[in-house]
Length: 308
Image (cartoon, rainbow, N blue to C red; front, top):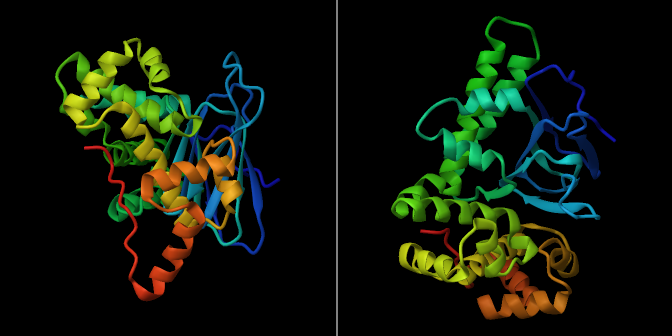
């Protein structure tokens, strides 16, 4: 184990992930109260988060979440969390105390959206958001500097940098755009649906379960998504999963079987069928063509754009 070395009294604990020749494990969310959020940012390489669901969820086995660079993952109050980092990976890992989060969210027009986001597990791809990725990385480095030595205003500075990180995450996720896409109550449901998808697309929830979690009927969810986002909810969830699969096949060194498991498919054959339906290619063929395209440039993989 390679636990964070900072004392628990700090408002935000950030550790650099330095490149290494070996796989490493970092223990996180070790505070007995469980009152921390976990943020992982990777600039290179890949990693895997493992944690226990909160009591009462019925999950007996650890939950896994892949993080592939450039990208980040956010966990809301995980228990017994650990990060397994593959060789050659670089980035940062942070633990955030509840009171620090509340102060960073503050009292602004966007505060409700920020807190809703912070209370949900999510993963974000940053390959097309390099400026935002750099701002997040810079803020994490600034927190390391502020907490590394005692100086006036350090806690205030840490809160300010966390607010910058949260705002960047909100912009990347598109939550503020979704909030304005609809009108009134529909906008609220669309915002919550998007966040639920980020947290559960690997769990392969049916549309009816998303609707149940939102407290609305599947027909209403279908109507809202079709009207405001141009696609039914089932298609939106499938596109999110396909985008994650394509990114993993391109950047991850995991086998097809390992990727199938990490993406929540019951077996590699099911994953292959899904991927071929979405892209026209089986996962292995897709990966080989990506490798050839790096040299020839003749293959243009399907693009699964983010939600409108």
